[in-house]
Amino acid sequence: IKYSSESLLKIVQEHRDAAYQTRGSTELRVDADIELSEYNLQDYDQEDENEIRNMCKDNFYEDNQIDPTIYPSESESEDSLDIVVSPTDNLAVVGVTGNDTNMLEIYLYNDKNQDWYIHHDIPLRSCPLCVEWLDCSSFGENGCNGNFVAVGTTESFINIWDIDIINCLKPVATLTSNGKDNKPQSGKSSLKGHSDSVLDLSWNRSVRSILASASADHAVIIWDVALSKISNIFSHHLNKAQSLQWHPFEAQLLLTGSSDKTVKLMDCRFQQSAINWNHSDEIEKVIWNPFCPTMFLIGSCDGSVHAFDVRNKDCIFRIDAHDMPITDLSLSYQTEGLLVTSSADGTAKVWDIGVNNKQLITYNYAYQSAV
Image 1 (cartoon, one colour):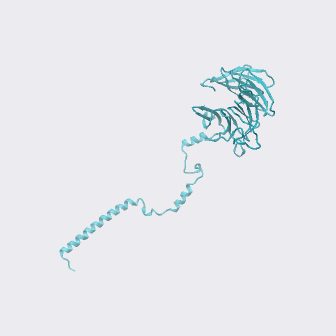
Image 2 (spheres, rainbow, N blue to C red):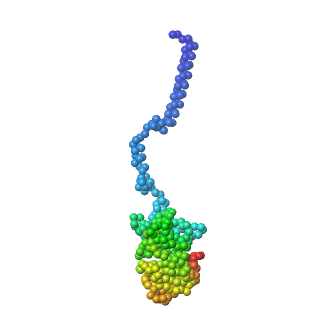
Image 3 (cartoon, rainbow, N blue to C red):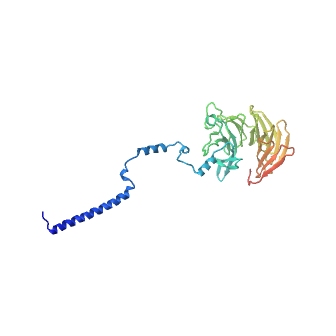
């Protein structure tokens, strides 16, 4: 085959252009492959079974505390320590009301570390008037003694709360006329509960399922908290039953004080058994002396404190402690004769009543309202 010079020149030119085009495409493709090679797309659909098996082993733990890949931050560790209640800690329960808010605040106190802070709180439906600690095993897990507080409010029932539970939404029991479910039960007591505010509570430390309550409806009620029902009702006061306390050693003896200006000592085994003391003013508080089982103290509306012996009617001594009504009295179970009084005048005072001349030790006037 013979080609003319013009034909050969044309063929050479066409092959040269084709070669240039092929080289340019190859260079572009090589550059693109270099950029995509780091993503390893050619192995995208290939799975490593060993890697998946290891992930299954590492990711499932019942508790984050045993997961070795999780390390709590320092702040989280400190918060956890604040929640834990150690054997050396003490808890104080305070009823708080104000600004349309009613609650129990549980404070933690540690003498060694000088800690004092609100550990947690429990919202309440109405204003708390009295609180009483108890450890009745009926509410504890597996029959063990728990950490419970009975609360009396401006309403006519009594709620019992478990203060070991944080963010507790409902009480473990409610004491009303017909038991905690508030439904009549056949064969059970039909005694009616309180019809007005619950003003004071006292837990029997000898018979640990028994709780006594005093109310503005004049009644004193004995509750069996294990069954959440009423055991007995006493209506021996003619006005508000303001205060009451079980004897520290004689389980059947209950001391009560009232706005009718009387103090009564009852043997709860008998309905009508009561020893009566008349007073010149309304009774605000009654307490027993744990170091002298025959002595009791009363705080009255005129701000005075009187001591009596159950074996006679005469007053043993009197302290003009405050200028306004007494709101509370407390005798130490550790130090004989150490008395704390509080009043509507905004003061709290510490007294030594174990000496012949009863003397004031110290006082605090840091409150702007009743203590």
